[in-house]
Length: 311
Image (cartoon, rainbow, N blue to C red; front, side, top):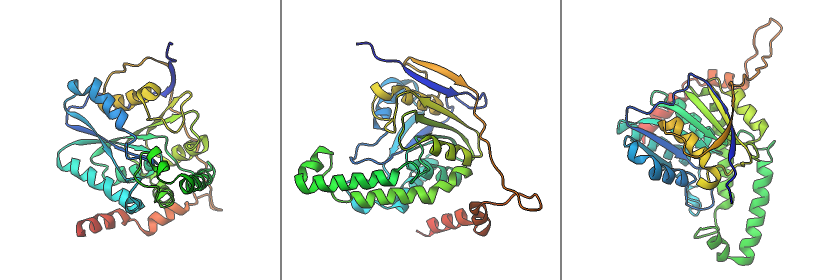
């Protein structure tokens, strides 16, 4: 049976750098919501090692596990940030240039860390970024998931855990709540990204909705382009067979690799996002709440750095 060729709509900007790195470069990949310990970026890492690693010895992929689904003590939003921060500092100390990829809920967290380490992270990839928690029915969907999970756990016990690749069924509610907290606390950093960014989304994504995508791009003030994939949903990093075109686009931007998987392509110029500015009676722009907050606490990131040193 002939495999269906994926259609990709790619925005093009000649200013984006797709060149092969001349220095040691790592692609740090954060995970989204997952109910087993297999990292979302594992399949992409294996694809790179199988097809490109030999010819790109200066490049490596590091999946960053923000939490372990079966360990409730790891389900804390502040721990996600601490883990990613530590991994970035580890590779800075090793002398690597860093490409950061955030997936799903952790896209917002990746924006926050890019801003913190803007001198070391010069490329950002946001895969299926989430901004909304209500409009996209995310909270409603999580509640339904938890209720169904609890009913099945009560009825089938350990069999449910084994089917999910876990050792226990405990901790699901806390995990979902911590993910929501991470989104809400970090999404203000979309507007603080300083490097060129590629946004990746499937056109059937039920969580990174058109509204959520618009909010992300509206907030971002940096240069960004969108890649959209036909007939792909939020699980856009699962397998080479279903998502190989996505893997290759990520690797092409991160390391300058070639594309081996045929796709049909539509090319577009980057879409300009219309920004509505409210004016006061004197004709001056009215600042948003986030801008006022930044003015009240402009040293927030410096305070964080000092706290890290004290740990």
